[in-house]
Length: 155
Length: 160
Image (cartoon, rainbow over all chains, first blue to last red; front, top):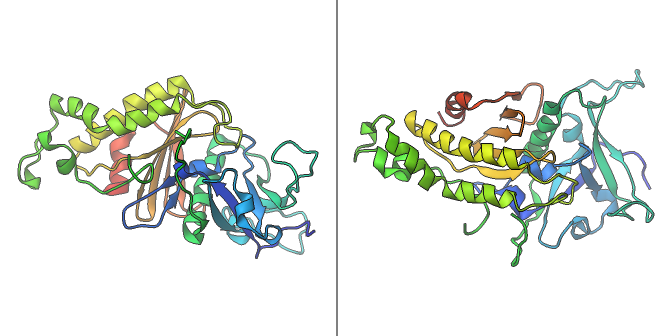
């Protein structure tokens, strides 16, 4: 399995119905809250290792959005120069495959995370990341649109 | 609410709030106490949604988010009514927000207008706003501490 996520790779993120906004006459938009993450490193799945995007859903009614790795890496521009191997993206997509022994959701070789470098210096930075991911998702569009659960326990 | 959870129609205040306007859109009356009670009526969907946030438990989104903070929800209830009144008092259109919560239990309000977006986080201790007009966080976003008195200026930026 490819251990490095290339710029060309597409990424899947499971999004709940309640994390979407329907603006009349416009495509379904994604809320910044769709990228909530307690560890401030949102999880994604690599399309390359997910033959069926349905497998990336956290629940059956979730939708799937697509993100372009290069666009994620360009959210906050830091020049990455091949002659300076210590240079890093401000936000990078790092392959973090989950084994069967990991905590749920386990057994996911496609799992990757959007991680900051260095770590967050203030709360605003993660909020900005979520906004940026929402902006990218709105452009890249939906792979699968979410549906409202019939007996939804979602707020 | 039918359809998707947050249907953000554009709607002038005059259409939302008949008691503060005359028949002509150009003859909107200045702010009056009536507006305050009108805001109670016209923010019912938002306040209902805020109430529903209090029903959530830890890890409500499957991403480890904590339960929305009760004090933040109460602050958000007050804020949304004030926001409505301020937009009307400034004769600006009103758009219902998308309401959700952050991983840290803050209440999140989001409004879109074409490429522009305003997000307000209401927390127990502090609040924050973000103005967004593109994905680059260095050149297309501004974030700062938020208090309610800033709302007219932010709202004007979004819909003005």
